[in-house]
Amino acid sequence: MEIFKEISLEEAIKLIEAGESVLNDEIIDELKAFYEVAGKIILYSGETNLENLLVGNDIVLVNGNLNVAEIIEDCEKVDTSLLIVLGNVNCKSLITLSSMSISGDLNVENVILGDSLCDYVLNVGGNIVTKTILDYGHCIISEKTITATDVFSFNAVEDEDGTVEPNLEREDLVDEIIDFDEDEKMENLSKTVAYIKRGGQIFRIS
Image (cartoon, rainbow, N blue to C red; front, side, top):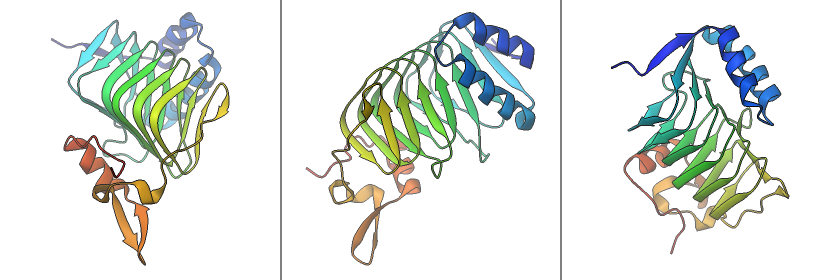
């Protein structure tokens, strides 16, 4: 059974405005900008339960809570993509290389990985709770609080209290996700993505 449908830009804006999120203006601005390129919006209505979610060329709008058993990942076969969730998000791991907006809370069991060469934002209207945040060059923002055991930050991880101070340095990262450059450790995006997809959950050297 098909659980999604295509909707117009005007219909999407009405759904967003009805939610009265603190992020509404930013979400609508992002939607309009991405729509000029994508030209197609896919809507999931109500509580949405998926095994995995890959976001590609089509804008994905979830009008309700999104529960993903495994991984949410964007930029599937494209350079930029947009995911909008008008509700809470629960998943095992989240990999973002582009723009995501979530009006509610974001709960990630394992890891949030972000890298857009510092161009895009993971914007969350509620709280972010996860075990590990790996900011390789992204902006990860919560309008409320961020709770994470380990934070590696190259660019920006921020909540209502300002910058979330990182407690992971490059020398702390496990070998599975790094390269060596003249004996110095450097985070490697493709290795990290592959490690997460293999079920990797340990990012700090014990």
